[in-house]
Image (cartoon, rainbow, N blue to C red; front, side, top):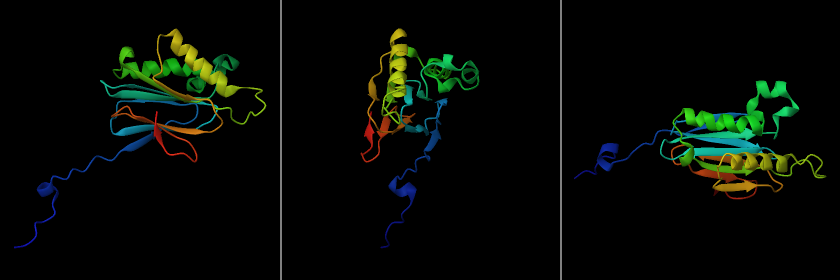
Length: 178
């Protein structure tokens, strides 16, 4: 008797669709309903990364904000609104709402805001970014379910759009769920 052939049908193998990374650059935002995608942003130093996810609608988004307040440069804010917390955060939420997200179901997570390249704490960009995000969320009745802000190291943030899992990578440390 010959050995059974190794076929996907015989053994029930399933080939998962390939996952894709959608990169959110510095000063950028992305919202998506592609459950085959993971949103990722790299090098969160003093910048703050915000993820939001609706587990029912399976939509989410990510913001990589560089500065807290757009009033320092109205022209730049007009051309690159996601660069700033005060213009980027509302745009993130509205983009996820447009894809079917519902405010009451959104899971919000934050990372970044490190004291980075400013050892004398002259500018405090990381602290100011974090404070601006937290204040804006509070004013709008939104509570972050997880927050990893401050410190002195950069971070990489990932949001799996299918599951809502948010992972955080920091140099020299194992990847962990936020």
